[in-house]
Amino acid sequence: MRPARALIDLAALRHNYHLARARHGARALAVVKANAYGHGAVRCAQALANEADGFAVAFLDEALELREAGITRPILLLEGVFDAAELDAVERHELWIVVHHEAQLRMIEATPLERPLNVWLKVNSGMNRAGFVGDAVAVAWRRLQASGKVADITLMTHFARADEPEVIATPAQVERFNAATAGLSAPRSLSNSGAILGWPQARGDWARPGILLYGADPMPGEGNGLQPVMTLESAVMAVREIDAGEPLGYGARFVAERRTRVGLVAMGYADGYPRVVPDGTPVAIDGRPGCLIGRVSMDMLTIDLTGHPDAGLGSRVELWGRQVPVNHIATAAGTIAYELLCNVKRVRFSYTGD
Image (cartoon, rainbow, N blue to C red; front, side, top):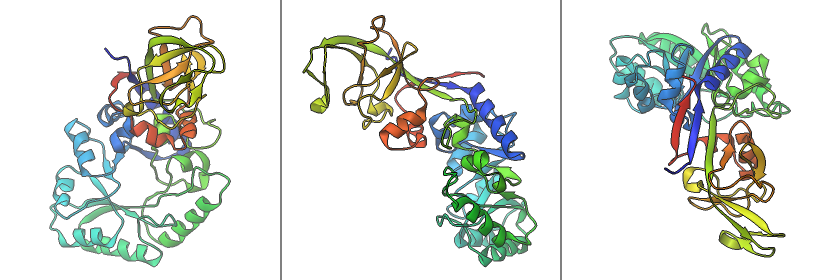
């Protein structure tokens, strides 16, 4: 059996959720959109079913998957509904919805409903991606109240630069949110992962932890006590030695400066490991620090075993996890941990910590 696998530590997931909730100091929706950032939405939601105050997903199909798996806690659709027909499923499955533009507001006003909805009204406080702006927030709030089809309204916003503690954009967004919602009696939700960890002035009635649940710290320094949930690993499938001056792999990017012992590892970019990482990108070889050499291939990559005389065929190689933070690999690839975690595929998923 091919040794490439992703180990998912559900105990670490629960640890991170409780850390987020304690840091924020109020209720928290566990964000499990995009298949729980690549970790398996159903298994992650089941692991948090007795812990989380609720869940957040992107769209209806993601919510229905959780309901079919027996998840009964509140589920918020962060993108809201795409057409009025979806309101029937929202109503039947008792889902919560975000309303972030005029057409969604009109759908609620025009659609007959048997029971009132729980709506999260989104404020555009400066990200300029979705939400109502300024005075339009109060207008939308009053229209929802007047429709007679809404039981509860939560006011929310989303931050564009909460993971940059030296930038004043987040306090400015908090000010704009507060100005737009002044005088409106409703719970508030501002904090995403970065704001939970770094911006206490953004705390409200609900937090929405996402990437931090999975142990990838969005803030610089990685000093917040998060535990990695996914360990991506494989094993050495072949060993060879090349002489000084010999190239290795596609494009001959790596050329040996000395006689080099090379380990061939069953993991490639088709599995979700980034092709663009440079020579020297860290790995762990049987628990010891090591590095990648040569260009990542579709199904394989190569590592330097020269300083690992006891390593060989079958040696465990951690690509990211407890020893190799996924943020380090993301930096080497010029991307973010979100993308790497979401892209993992073709590997076996194993779950621990149930």
